[in-house]
Length: 298
Picture 1 (cartoon, rainbow, N blue to C red):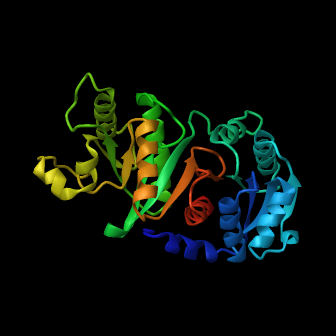
Picture 2: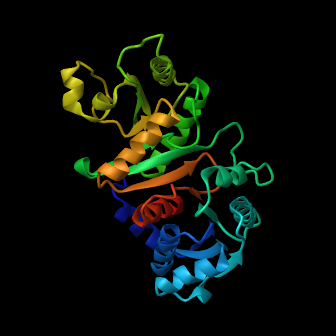
């Protein structure tokens, strides 16, 4: 089981062939810096789509020769994202990456039926992978950026997407906590009802490859003492590997809080697609964008 981003890096360094990442909106210093780091470490090749002169200036500022990369002029964010996806679809690149453009522009290209990146019967969702140093393991949060108010069926697909990523990280039977404001089912709080349904579906074999429990509050999902003090027991309570958020608002606020108020290393992943995708916030630090590249390469 992989427990740190350094361990992921070692696994990828052991591979013979580099993947090619195409960065849409390449005139972004943080995204470009993370791609350059991956390039210099021998992990990837890069193709850059964006404002050519700004991209070249950033590369020179980093001490990098712009001629080491293929650079394509495209100032429009939506057009840059679509071209990046087209290159992946045509086999000219392996992984599309979001740079200086909006999430909506990037997602519109990923969801374009021309490219067919969405797996049949599935949905795209986002996962934040946290390096949980306190317990020397990874903790996965989904969905924090794509699905606004997922219903039960959508949450089931989000859960399955997130569990598949946990398996890639080597967590054979991830413990999944479905988060809600409280641990009891309250018909007036839909998040508690959905959580209970997901837990029961897992119990009856409708959701496999993991152990699901919910509703669970955030405290008793990740802290054993908190779970014990509230009388919450089970295989997941206090030691969850995966946290399924009740909605995008909750997940987005949580990940941004962790970013600005803690020093936890993290990666943003878009899952449920037929190809790996690197999608992070424009305000994310270069180190976390690099971690996101590592997760996509894995």
